[in-house]
Image (cartoon, rainbow, N blue to C red; front, side, top):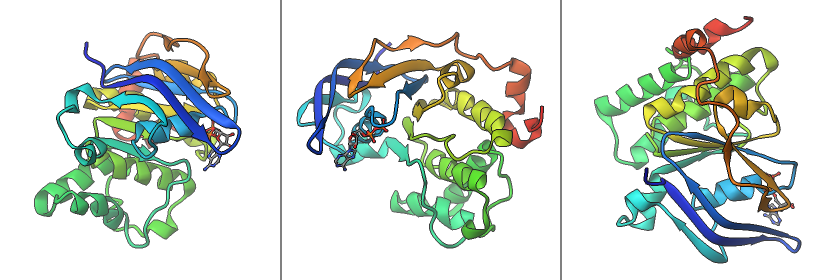
Length: 241
Ligand code: ADP
């Protein structure tokens, strides 16, 4: 299977004292990769590099399937959701429409993408809600829907469950575990060492700017029970189980 992203001989310096060094890392399509490691290990730096928001001082980051595209077009295939996502003032719909408009997606196609992205994250009918009246968990899910509406090949999530309360965590993890079925390759960071297994993801351990080992499966993909997965369309249904 052809990798979706290849990193080779990467060196990225941040400030005076930190260097991220990756000799070889290949991410395969339609999988979930979970970056784990202590604070300051380099998880966010790696995510920003994968989002092409930071250029390495040395080495190459390649997207084999999009090799012929311009850097701007390649960047559109990747979406990064920051740890504390910022929502624009206005409605949930305004927030999802913004990035779509920038890509020239308007009218019915825009409405359809907004509706289906909100359904995917269990926020059906949230289009007219005011962004500044949402709970922390809802903000996180709107940010995820905003990214999904762009239909990226690669979705990068920086600590997506960091601000999710424990009651909503299980539902949110089910949602994350389903994303590869929609053709998305997911790379997310977490402090929670048990999360890779729950997500059926491949763990990438990082410490002091270095990968500790080659990525390995924390468990067989699909660790969450099938019966629970069926509830993904409305993850709130599984709260309190
Ligand atoms: P993690 O996400 O694992 O907590 P980061 O990638 O955020 O780690 O940070 C890795 C290192 O890079 C830390 O030592 C941090 O202080 C440093 N760093 C991050 N951003 C910057 C910056 N803009 N300027 C200087 N140093 C930075």
